[in-house]
Amino acid sequence: MGDGPSLEIYPLARDEAESARLNAQHKLLVDIVGGPIDKSIRLENIASVADVGTGTGIWLLDAKTHLITYSPNTNPYTLHGFDISAAQFLPSPETHGLTLSVHDILRPFPIAHRERYDLVHVRMLVSALKVEEYEVAVRNLVGVLKPGGYLQWTDLDSSHLSSAPSAADPRASPLITSWLTFLELNNLSTCPTTTIENAYTHSNELLDISSTTYPVAGRPELSERAQNWELQAFAAVMPPVLRVTGQAKSQVEAEERAREAVSGVKEFFAGGGEVLDLRFGVVVGRKRGL
Image (cartoon, rainbow, N blue to C red):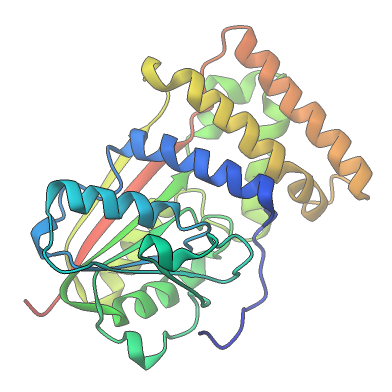
């Protein structure tokens, strides 16, 4: 569908193990933010949905169930997922009522998708987009929204990590420092919620912009699942992070140092340490025109 991918900084693999981790991550994120579709969005107006950075398509499947349950539509929903790579696409998506296409968010979408969708959803691109690229991404996303349609973007906020108690603990601090260094060196946003909100505002196309941050720390009902998610996520991301930041000179060294860093966080949790203070922000805006 797209013109081909731009140069990526995305550090995660696109294999079966990572797809399984992403699907498990989805279930946790939905519980953290209170559902696949933000409560500010009027479901009765949603018939066509795009998910950009769709990965396996898991969010689209959940959104479909959510819409059928809370706002049944007599006509079939249009559900289209886009990703820069097809490597993790759900097999035979059409049997689930989905269409999945390759497209780079930093390139304009094909004309066939112009003003086609009532809801466009984006999630977890913090390690894929540089700060200066958010406005380009939002401009392209707004282009496929119908007038009056909603843009919902959820992403990871790392801005509280350095001031949390875990940052001063020698068991957790090496991992935290490496992650924040990776973000800084690549000009990635530590607080994408603010970056996204600014991009919405600068587009001059989105109204009723709202931003909500959901902490994980202090929510005991999610604590164990969140700790397991953090261990799995950092186990996946740390080897490439260590290579990119120059803290490891070979893949073997990167994997060994990553195991040590993740093991330190695991010990921190086992010793009573709370979940690392990562938060999730949801930014919603509605396109002008209705």
